[in-house]
Length: 431
Image (tube, rainbow, N blue to C red):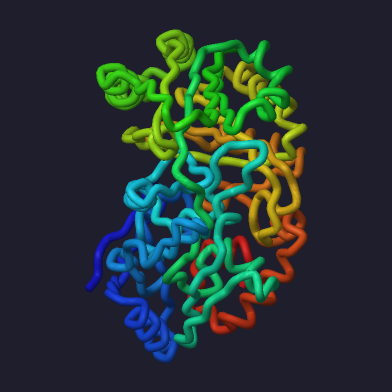
């Protein structure tokens, strides 16, 4: 059955033949059969990407039926989950079990395998990206064989935890979870001139810290999340959540962007107004409810990881570029932090990073802004997020990832015929 497919950002489309296996065994047989017939296969989860990482070149393998928790051990925190499970449903199921992910990003629309295979991360100076929480995974390789991969095979484990879908199709993951925990969120407006000189201190002072800078202004919004006792219950009033997170951040912001697309000169003055609308608020809640927020306004995004000590220089240079050009950028710039890990293609491989993400409304021209940002990040050995827009190719990326050659060797061994390849993987990994 063929269908029109597009990624969430609307930047990539295709019309593949779609296969929907209902069990891991059926998936393995589907992959084996496709490879034997010389077909190419690309697994897809929720398609929540900004790049063509999940674009099918021939057959699209939907994971929509491979959902749910397989097993959970509350004593050890080990949870086995099928690869197509959306993060939103996984978080709710874990909460019912008294468990939680150690960290999350601010969007929960992705499937667990898609999020981990592209390097999704949250923020926290002592917390690595989400893929570091994988204790094991089941991988179906193009010959149709299914193998369990964990730390007993450090080479394959180092490659497969963040494999871009290039090594095989993940059907099941074992996650190292924590007992469910609550967070207190403190969100407040501030000044870039106040926060930037202290940003390293703020990164270290909180379990989770992030900042949003409004281009063309010196205004920022900071968000610090810290652990609180389970007895602490300071929920955000329902009316305030609806006003801030749904009406202002989505309904009003979306309408404003639609109008501003035709009046680019008004964008930066609008940012001054938008930044002033945000006021301080403090609330507590289960971790996943504090981490994740609704995002209904469509946008484009590029994100780079730079050594965390470079974050002030990158933001200073980016602010100067926007001000000099008066570039009409209506979306705030997001700044986060993460600890290093040992995963070969992780942006955090053996390096503590600050993550800087730039966004632009999907109907606005992003090209010069994103190109300038990439130039600034490149001066600091920036590593791009695999699921977000970037222009780098295999040769440039090999200089940023010390284990890239090793990853390519594993790929050659597991998928020599490039059954899982598409144009994006050819670009970033080589043919």
